[in-house]
Image 1 (cartoon, protein in one colour):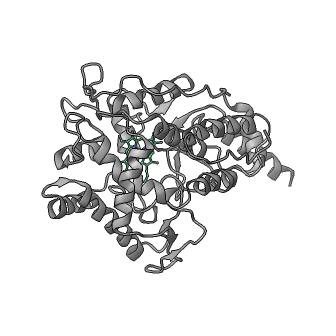
Image 2 (cartoon, protein in one colour; image 1 turned 60 degrees about the vertical axis):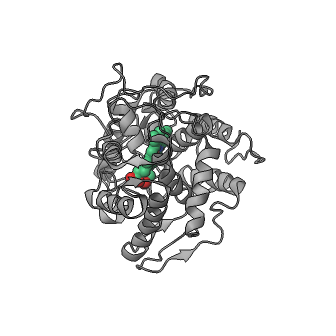
Length: 378
Ligand code: HEM
């Protein structure tokens, strides 16, 4: 028995030492947190920067930001936007945002693509709360194989925007569902389908009609093939947003006609590469702008949030999910249910940094009538 406790303690120490500073703390047991927290390089999250003053279209694939394929130690993940920013040096090329860089990087990705401040806040703070390490203020944009020990038992990857069915999720455009294994890498079969839809509905480009029909198709495909298909908020809302992003952010800002040429689509989705001479969007792409497109995409095939029930073709609508009908419930559910389920009982410095990140997240709700909620004592 004594041997067993010594072995267990040794295992916990080894795991804690091997615990990367960027790895998410979400879902860890109180015992494991107690071991790990003292070994984290704690960084108080600095306030996010405000909006850009110059929001005109600009050359962003410029001499200062050349494309470079990621090196062996560089981490890339499932978001073509973040991969592109890292491959062009707008984000650190290694793929992990350091404490000082997180804010700069956040600022830079707005520079890189002209994303609106509210949308940038929403994405960045969702990511740090769901997939990042709030103590070190670090976030990895991808995954890396590593020894993770028994908790969690699998997958053997560390970091990344990876917590399934929350931010990352099913029915993605060019990434497969987690149920089928690799949900991070570019999937050629799905991209070929996107091309087929663009030819059929968009006259050879990815336009709103093609994107709308492909969104519907991806949902139907997951219902018909993935017994664990989950399509509830926040993933549900995110999936529609990601369908709108390429039309708004990957289209050259001098054209801004919401029609993405397929060779450009491949560069972004597969290689994380801006086309030669690429100009960013010609206005800040805010939540309101994305929301306008999302409404059109949704209304063409109004699938409500829900999930398969462990069997294919068993999609059942979740009547409690706010979907697009109640923005404030979407916010309060995210804070009180999603974040709280990832961190049921945070203490001390972890609670403080979570509260700070939740305050920053709430900045993205400015302009709504929603009231801030506090899942942990202030
Ligand atoms: C802090 C900033 C960002 C975060 C945290 C983020 C996070 C994510 C995550 C977690 C996914 C995967 C969702 C899934 O399972 O399908 C995703 C997908 C996506 N993101 Fe981002 N993203 C960010 C910025 C951007 C930007 C700036 C762009 C475009 C310029 C972008 C474009 C996309 C697109 C098009 C997809 C869908 C990929 C696909 O389904 O094939 N993202 N992002």
